[in-house]
Image (cartoon, rainbow, N blue to C red; front, side, top):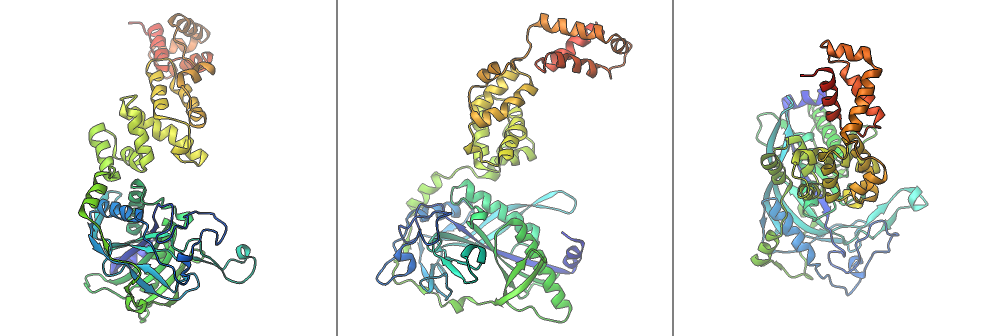
Length: 494
């Protein structure tokens, strides 16, 4: 937070609510059999139903119900047994029917909450509860392409591949007070969506988009100020920057004697400023009414309970369990629980090597580093939990040094295989013959007589230099702890 923004927030309080649109993880669209595919040639994943052709009727994709129920249960929300689809009427070139099938007064999910971790000015963190007003199903619109380098001319082109893709719109209560809190909420919500396999929530593919409603009011005032809406923010950084910029714009306007108008805003990351796109519509401008082509949704309680029974452990619960049951630090537990694939891998590795802290250290320091360097997901690599556990057992047995083990991690990531076989093939097995190691230690002491005398006289600093000489002669294959013991026994006998 900038000093200027901090000064503003000493006098004014921001009131922020977020509307998140996330694509649901389905093979086909919300009301048609058209495939949901990304990167397809423009207008090659379309269907007459999505285009609103005469005589067509929408048919609900049932999978979206279970995905919506999952999200509702995971956010402590009410999953409504009865809900209806409505038509939201507005006219825009990328909306082929002239209306969008959505939900309004009776959504499938309502009245929930999630907790976020908020960093305070002193560096400590505090948990804050953010309410969720509703989460409703709707179809996505198409995409207008204004970029001449893409469309091939200065005209606007329409790609309807995205039209009809199932969305869940998740609307928060206006409980957020800073841009940083908004970023924390979005990260927590995205993590839940991915854990549940409700959505890939890939922001680069437009699967997770955010609109932010922002207003400010003098501190101590209970009435809300006039809000504006920032549209289609597709990165956490842009969300935080845009909200901060809009708070500053509204402050400057009010302090200058002006009034904030309800409007749709755009954020320009190049200038760091927001600007008015158009005056904002109210809900009644969309002329919502129940869709006559779709019967009301009646979700049996048995179906809700069946989905509840299959819910995975959620990240916050998993993180606390890693801390309480396994003795991991809060930082390590949070890192391991951040993604479901990493958490599942970690727990599977514990089945082959019971030292949780050792497994956590190798996962976070070495395995994830190798994965990040390759810019791939864990699931796309060849390393297995059994492979990591086997690697650590070789270290425990003294057959492999930590240094040599680190050389094998990238190999396991790229190729997989048995760590013991890889160790043998690369000649990395530790020097375990005590006679051989003792002979090397003795030769190093003899070759460094002056250094050895200093150690005998009580100066321990040169000991590391002798250890380095031994490790060099063994090509790093000696156990450092064993080398230190041998040197000490030779130079400082009891």
